[in-house]
Length: 344
Image (cartoon, rainbow, N blue to C red; front, side):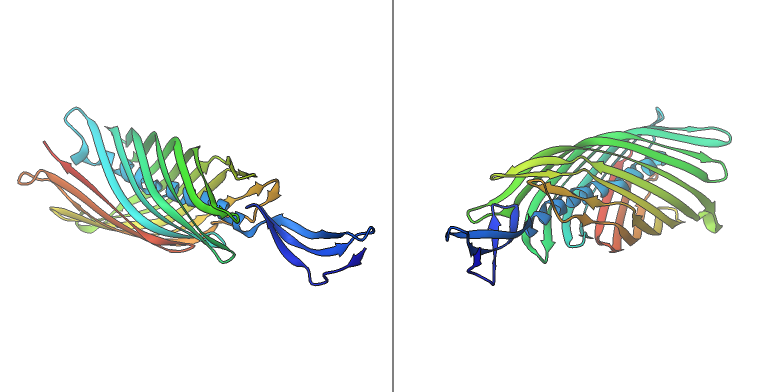
């Protein structure tokens, strides 16, 4: 064949395919377009970033489960029948690096019911919880337009802790639930924008070990290590004539840190400094069978938590727990929460 266009040109088909080619003359003298390369379009990367955003939203619930486990053990939350009740709500904004990045704004809430059994040499705490989270996200990539969406999840689980008399403890939780993922304008062709509206299942657990040391004036220092596992199932959807298959995304976070609690007559104050590392966080998928450029949240972040607890007494039946948590590193952002209870 005789080449007509030596410079070549780029092309896009639908939302999923882009490549390069050029005009040539075939053996019969007809002008035809010869494809030189083709693959998943750059904008398809938005879909795996959106999957990462959903897992970021789910991971925000980790600390609420920890707070529920701690709250069920407090004497002010335990009724005369021995049943403890705890509720907390909070929200925050997170920027998560993915190779590109996503911004996630979430509200999270949890309600837990449990019991605490005190023995001579140890204490056992156990309970059940219901959790819910809702919010929105945006995807940001140098090679694609911005995408927007929303995510909410509802689920429940079990939690427990065993503590020796010397302060050594082991804790854990299980969670399972459903996520509603909705996205707008993640993908575009020459006519319109496309997204999805799908439901997926999530599951997770956490394990922790630590020890609390009593120091002067009733204050305490706690050192700990915790492991969080969360997995969101994959999903399939169509954008026009293009088919997308997104794989499941797994998060494995290891956190090590220390907490100092200063106890006063009406108020307790605490500070918690930790380092956490995402060991997994890979998101992958295919568009019309072609591999999409993946996203990756693995890496480390520093976490600082500050809080204050107002304790009930004979003059005031109210208890109040205020909390603020900040992240720096691969994950950046702020999250706050509040728990209020009236003692009858």
